Amino acid sequence: MEKQGRVFFSSVTLTILIISLLSSTSNAHNITRILASHPSLSTFNHYLTLTHLAAEINRRQTITVLALDNSAMSSLLDKHLSTGTLKNVLSLHVLVDYFGSKKLHQITNGTTLVSSMFQATGTAAGTAGYVNITNLKGGKVGFAAEDNDGLHSFYVKSVQEIPYNISILEISSPLSSADAEAPTAAPSQINLINIMSKQGCKSFADLLRSSKALPTFQDSVDGGLTVFCPTDSAVSGFMPKYKNLTDAEKVSVLLYHGVPVYQSLQMLKSNNGVMNTLATEGANKFDFTVQNDGEDVKLETKVDTASIVGTLIDQDPFVAYKISKFLMPRELFKVSEEESDAPAEAPKASKKGKKKKASPAADAPADGPASDSEDQKAADENAAHSNNAVTFTGVVFFSLFIANLVL
Image (cartoon, rainbow, N blue to C red):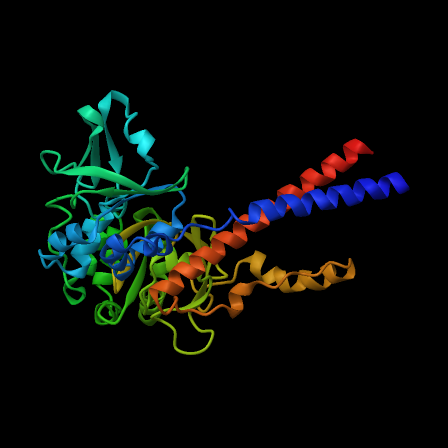
């Protein structure tokens, strides 16, 4: 018994020690805080926040930011681009791969093409959102947008590197791209139908075009609107049910796919909970629950569950996502058996001494963070909690395994 007690004490001590060592590295990066210690990059830092790119950078785990000093940013701001266009240009400076200073000088065959966040938005035409990185003679490294001839920007220095999570590299001048610098439409000028039709949601767009729900969507754009657009195949599978609805019910089910506030992907991932829709007419009416699992965001209606599979457009205050299923509100369709059985199963669990853990989603606020800094704080906290949970579980099992070996 004495030996077992010593082993148990040793394993617990080991667990605490490892957790304390890992806790300092489990937090997600925060681009705003990193750049705050570099005054020469303050303007770049400010516009990352203004365009909401900072939150997107914080969300990603493998990223390279091509930072611009205040002088280089001045040359970009002299073009007087709209906020939407400036976001496209800056997103071209965020590469969705890790490049430290050492890797820049070890590029295979001397040159490579890397996808940027601009390419990932789906806004870039063809490969216009790719960045060419070329290792030149004498240790010089050049950068250029794929749709621009010649290398006009060069590597200056490494600002900070956290392998293989985030790398911040300063470059000499902004990347120039005709596609990224193309004027973006003002929110009120956005054509919902055309955007959906061109991005794989033509069937849903056709339903909306001929519906009395369309004016509500259009009138909501300027004040903030998030649209969840089912894919063509999802609409095709839902059509037999849709045809059996009354005209009023058809309007409601279409309005159910719109949320009257702007919700970036980062906001959806950091702020799970019940969300009202354009169809909501009172408390607990025509709402659904947002839940995420890592990078996957799901919309749960209690009748079915859809996943976000892509972004059609993200231009604050309007954003549209492509989803895997047609959302069916419980007010119009039968609740799935799994959901309806859940309350009946709860008492059985309590008899066995097990407590059913309540979901935090029901109490979570529907609106996103009030400011950019809150977006980033929420992203940091979510990442930290997730990483700590995984770390704690793994360490405990490891310690118990060691204890069993000793015994």
